[in-house]
Image 1 (cartoon, rainbow, N blue to C red):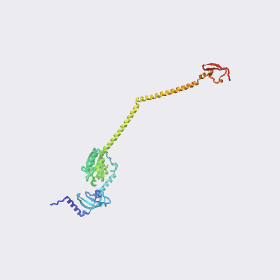
Image 2: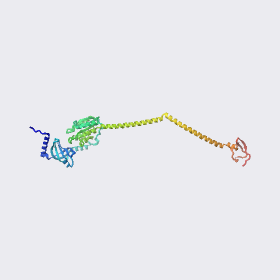
Image 3: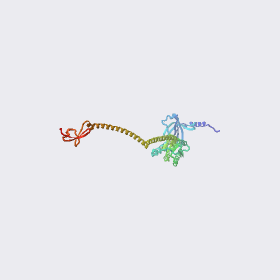
Image 4: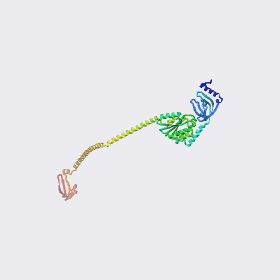
Length: 399
C-alpha cells in the first residue's frame, strides 16, 4: 500500500530534509544578483544567478540592517545562509544572514563596455534623435504578441487616439533567439509606412531583458524607418535599447502615452481654439461694422444733397451776415457824409460871403488876395460878394 501524503505533509517533509542536511544548513554561495527588491518591512528579496541556473534568496531585516550598502542587479556577491523550503510559496529558498560584494557582475560589465563603445561612436548622440510626430497615422509595435505589454499598449492607444492604425510586428522578447527576431521585426516595418515605432516588453530580470542590450538591436533601432520609443521593463530598468531609441519611456504603457496625443486634450484644445477663432471673427466683424458705419456717415456728409444743404445753410448765413454788415456800413457812411457835410458847410466860402465878406482875386491869375502887399496900383481885381461879383482896379498903393 503506497504512502499518500497531503500537500502540507509533503512540503513539511522536504523542509525537514533540507534543514537536517549539514551542507545546506551552513552554506556559502557566490553568484550575480538579479531581481533585487526591498520590502516596506526592510526584508531583502533577490535571485542569485549563474549561467542558466538560479536560486531565490531572502535576507530578513535584522542581517540586512548590518549591510553598509545594498546590492543592485548585476552585482557579484558572496552570501552565507541556510537552504530551506518555503512551504507557503512552494519553492526552495536560501535564507541569507551574510552578504559581501565581490565586484561587478559579468553581465553588468558587458553592458557598460557596449554602452561606452556605442556612445563613443556617437550612436546615442542627441543630434541623432528624431522627433516624434504630433499626430501619427500608423503606429508600429514591436513586442511579443502574447505578452501583457501588447494589451496595455493597445488599450491606451485606443483610449487616447483611436484614429491611429496599429501595425503589430511580433517578435520574441526573451532568450537567445530574441535579438535577431527583434532586428527582423523592426526591419519588417520598413514597408509599412509607419510614423512611429514602439519597442516594448514587460518587466523582468537583467537576464530576461538582456536581448535589448545586444549591439545588433541598438543598431537596428537607429536604422529603423521611423522614430522609436523604447518601453522596456520597469522605470528602474535601463537597457542599451533605451539609449539607442529616439525617446525612452519607463514602461510599455508610458511608451503608448508618449506615442499619441490624448483625444480629450485635443478636444479641449480645439474648443479653446474655436472660442478664440469665434472671438476673433466677432471682433473683426464688429470692427468692420463700425468702419462701415463711419464710411456711411462720411458718404452722407459727401453726398450732393448734403453738400447742397450745407452750402445753402452757409449761403444763408453769409447772406445774413452780408445784409447786417451792409446795413452797418451804410449807416457808418451816412454818418460820415453827414459829418463831412457839416464840415463842408462850415468851410463853404459862400457862407462867409453871406455874412458881408468878399473874396478878392487878382487878375488875370485869379489869385486870392489876402494881404495888401500882394497888389500894386493899377492891378485889376475881381471882387466876389454874396450875390455876384464885379471888377475893380487898385488906384493907390498904401505900402
